[in-house]
Image (tube, rainbow, N blue to C red):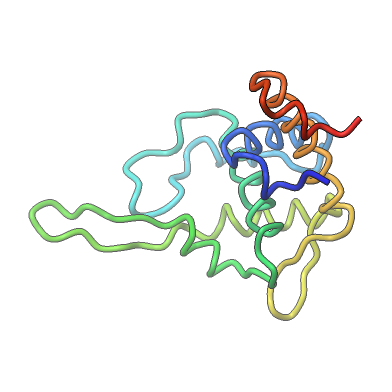
Length: 154
């Protein structure tokens, strides 16, 4: 069985983001999403209009790969970065938590994620969606790379 662990993350996140945009009406960016920076280490808001879906896809993949519950603070650390401070040395800053929290709430509403005392975990429906997208992403990659044809289940 093909899982998101066997598929390149960039291709997988791109396919999953478009799948979330088409199939889940619960996952929509709020009106402030076009103007908000994702953290203090960023100078501008994201330029891509679909960044909300890409971040949701990335969060889902990280929940899949992680074997334990993941909280908002962990996601803030994952998506954080180095803040440049002029002539002073740069320092690491966590990402903003608002957009991560809203995305997780939307994923909960869609039934892909559930909340526990330790953090968020994927539901069986969420795992199924990610496995489905990973399989079709692998098929697409196998079409491009002929040496992967032997791994495609018939």
